[in-house]
Structures are given as structure tokens and as C-alpha cells.
Amino acid sequence: MMPPSEATRSVLHIDLDALVANYRLLVSLLSGSRCGAVVKADAYGLGAEKISVALAAAGCEDFFVASVDEGIALRRHLPAKRIFVLDGVDSGDAREAAARGLIPVLNHRAQVEAWMRATASPGAIHLDTGMTRLGLSAADIDSMIASGALDRVRPQLLLSHLACSEDAAQTMNQAQRLAFVRVLDRLAPIQASLANSSGIFLGTDFHFDLVRPGAALYGINPTPNAPNPMRQVVQLKGKIVQLRDVDSPRTVGYGATHRLNGTARIATISVGYADGYLRALSNQGSGHIGNVRVPVVGRISMDLTTLDVTAAPLAACQPGEFIELIGPRNPVDDVAAEAGTIAYELLTRLGPRLARVYEGG
Ligand SMILES: *Cc1c(COP(=O)(O)O)cnc(C)c1O
Image (tube, rainbow, N blue to C red; front, side):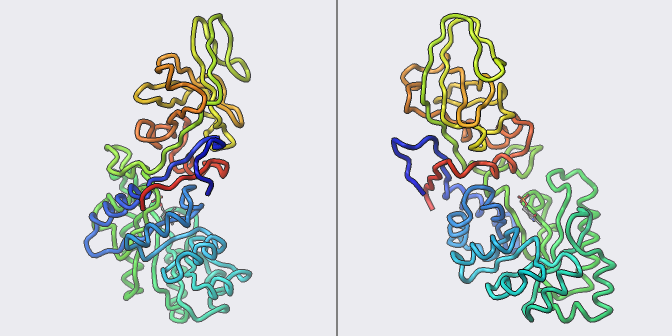
């Protein structure tokens, strides 16, 4: 990746030490379970290679991606770790997945059959306990036990996914856990995995053999009703390209949606919605210059964003200086809330045009 330089438009700093600290914090909550890592969607936009290699160095043995393509790409960097493919395989890619030593999560009968035709390697199987998205029903699994199909698959992991884990008060969490245990008892001995990031915080009953955090590793709050126990991993800094002093009434940006009535100072930064700084942050978002909060004014454009920096020291607003848009003072969850979305979407939209700079690790 390009190092930050005079030519850099804007920078996405990714703190690998914070990532590893988050991994260790999650590990410290477990007793006897393993902690995997979900690195689908290019590790939630942060770069699957760098993130996965750092986590592997910290002791992570089990990685989860969405697709076979993601698994093939990751295999080049992790020759000896378990890589699970959450979307599973079909008859078109099962052989390739087997050749790369990927472990598909088999979600329905046709995937089970495609995998058995391709290889004798064991897969994982997904039990749907309430998401109604991917996964076999308990009845499907019963009939696979009866027909002997399950014996031939020799699954090495039973997986299910929680629908409401970020809300510990939801009775659905226990209901899903019980549905999971009922099927698990019939398949034992087999490894089991139920918890995503928030599921880890529901307690050891939810941990089983392997937990599968994604969000919490990347600094997203897994307990939205309580303070965030995770460290921020991402810092997005927009470079000021122009500073504009205004002394008479005028409007800012497309649609003239923000009106300046007196004197003001407007900084234009080279970050826009094409970089994943969501257009919904128009007139809603804010950045920081030092400790001074500077609001986004007017609509966010494709490549540019305007902020009212009147309150900030003049020297810190000059072209070439940076405004923090995501970071310690602008946590990912808060920025996402300002945009009316969740931090998962904010991170996965951060665009390829941002220079990704890795620190620590
Ligand atoms: C994305 C995903 C995860 C990770 O969830 P987080 O909330 O990011 O921790 C775990 N399991 C499955 C099946 C997923 O799709």
C-alpha cells in the first residue's frame, strides 16, 4: 500500500496493536474455548491479509471468510490455519475449495451433496436456530442422520448464528442456544460454535468450543447498551485541500442545504462518499481538529466534504493539515449513528482510494 505522502488525499490508519489487544481481551473472557476471527469482506474493509497475519501471530488458528474466493486469497497468507467459508460451496467451486484446504460451512442439502462429490474432507455444518437465512433445519439434520449422509460428511464443526446477541435481555438468545444444544447432543463428539462478538459477552454458556468474533476485533462496541470495552482500531483522516474565509451570507455545497449568515471559515477535505464517508453524514457528521469538534456542513460530494472549522485554531486548518473523521474522538459507532446506520456498514464501505497505513503489529 502507498505510504502517506504529499500526494495522499486522505489516510486510513489501522492500528494492529489495538486489533491484537482486542483479540486478547476476547480470549480473556473465554475458559477453554478457542477464539477464531471473522475476516470476511476484506476484514470488514480493513485489509484481510494484514489483519489475518497479525491475528495469526497473536495465536488465532481459525478464520472465517464469506466466499471461496476470499478463502483462496487468504490461503496464500495463511498456509496452515483453518479457513471456514460461511457461504459454503456449490458444485462449481467445491473441488477448488477442497484443493485449497478450505472448510465450507454446509448450509443446505445441495451443498452437502456437492461437497461429498468433490472430496472426502470433512466440512462444517450450519444449523439454523432462528436467523432463517442460511443453515439446515433440525429436521434436515435428523433425516441426514437417518440416511447415513451425515456419517459420510463427518462434519468437524456444528455452527449456528445468533439473531439478537447485542441485546442480552432478548429471550431469543436462550431459545437459540437450547435449539443448538438439542442438535449438538445428537451429533457429539463434534466441535461447536455459536457466538459472534456480542455472543461472547452473553457468558460462557454461549462459548462452546470456538467463538467467531468480527466486529469487536475491529473496535465496534459488542455491548451497545454499555460502554465500549474494545479499543478503536481505525482512524480516518481527511486532508484539507482548501480553506475558505466567508464574510457575507452564502450557502455551502450541492442543493445549497447549509446557509452561512455571518463570518465563518470552511475547510474542504479530499474525502467524499466515494471513499465511504457516507452521504447520509451531510449536515450530520463531524470531525475533530485536536479537541475541537468541527461539524460537516452542506452535502457530502463524491470526492469532497466541507466542514465549519471556525472554532479551530487557524494554523491547524491550513491546506495539507488533516481532520479526524473516524478515530478516538469520533468512534466508529458514533459516526455510524450520525449516518443512521451501523458501524459494520461504515467500515465495509471504506473505499480502496484511501491510503491504508498499518501501525504496530
Ligand atoms: C459475520 C458473522 C460473524 C461475525 O459477527 P460479528 O457480529 O461481526 O462478530 C459470525 N458468524 C457469522 C455466521 C457471520 O456471518
